[in-house]
Length: 140
Image (cartoon, rainbow, N blue to C red; front, side, top):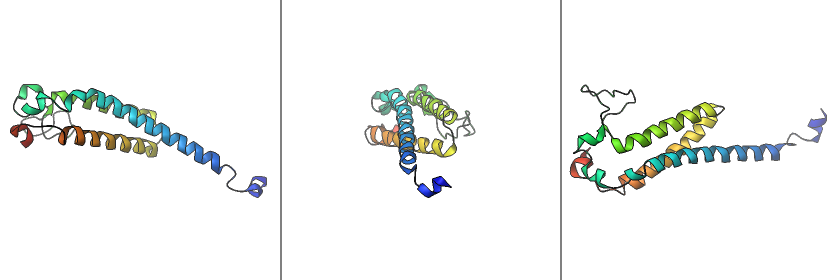
């Protein structure tokens, strides 16, 4: 009862600071995971492989069986570029680590949303908008 007499917002400032601190750490974890992905994908953002994407199948990881089903069980509808397979593996590894390390679904979802937004913006800006594809690669 004495705490209620002081006021219900006695620790509001401290709770707010703790929430901000936690949000900063979640953002730092997402940024670290994105950094690992983007460093691994640096060679994918441009270069000769984009000009031949879809023409030289020897450079691509075969992920789809003849019946159109992803052999890895990840839902892919086409073979992945070999140069993108490694960055995607790193991204999957980091996502798994985030799921194991973060305490609850809300925190995990917040971190994953931030990470996915960064990866999406990076792939869109650096690959989809910044690359020159061959006709066959563009059709893929």
